[in-house]
Image (cartoon, rainbow, N blue to C red; front, side):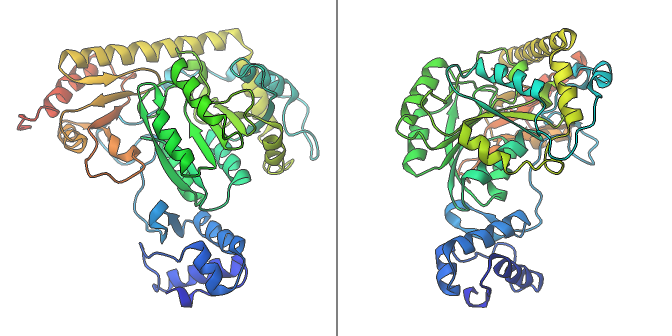
Length: 442
């Protein structure tokens, strides 16, 4: 198969692979040659082969499978966050905030309007930049910060990885992992290296192993880790920072997606001497998923590289949106609503977990929008039984980075918006579904 791929430029090589795929000569799951091997076969520079595979990955033609190499992608469905389409079941796996807890932006809309912004002007609203520096600086004291505004956290992570890595570079990801991070790394053609997560966050041994494996970047969720809800403790954060002192140029990306809603203090992997870093904070969890804006607080070099990818008038974030976010985040009423929402999620999740424990099931509601439930039997079996009772749950298998011999025994449930009657029914159904002796009569 390697002899039939042709081309001397990245575009020509990518087009050759796409043509072979369209003709059916390359089928779903077929492995492509490793980058070095392809470069040698075609007599091109390795970077040319890397660029070709990146083009193919971005087009969805191929997908990186770590040690399994690069394979032709299929059209199989992949797990996504949010509501499931075309289901009559009560969806308890959405990961969504409660729309009733998202502040009404109507009051802020009038204040957001103003003088039109034209080509060539600064891409970041100065007032928002000042607020962002203060917001991030509180949790990264003594660190010289630069601000970039992006179209949400996923956009920020994609840009951060693209400016720092080449295809096949290794990236450390939490395992289990946030779905968007899994997709971002695979789409970019990077190699995911799993780092186990426990109640205190990324494990020290896991990060050490990833660093030994040569990762060039680390994506970490310091609090409200999705899906487990775990949060870095001061002790664990200090131990991880100590590991990273010997690796100051490994890009550390911290995705603090829950930020203003979190009931727990912020701990960081980013030490004062670390050279490549980004603290990313999106507003989607508390101002709404459609408010596509995130701030990335970074070192100077990373900010300079990101700036090259934010052309005025084309790939910048709308100044109207920037002003709208600024208006809401400087409104005491809105800030009070966000604080109330954070307490609401924590209280509802903690109450649900406590009631599950009364039925003999362990559930973690440490922080975040979800509850991480441990089952004595396989999670897929529990989910199937719940479906018969009208519930659509999400199992831990969807969040795993690596294929494992043992299936997951966890479910990630979004329950903060259930009524009291729904909550009581779900707890009874879940306890019965997780019972190994249950026959699951309809």
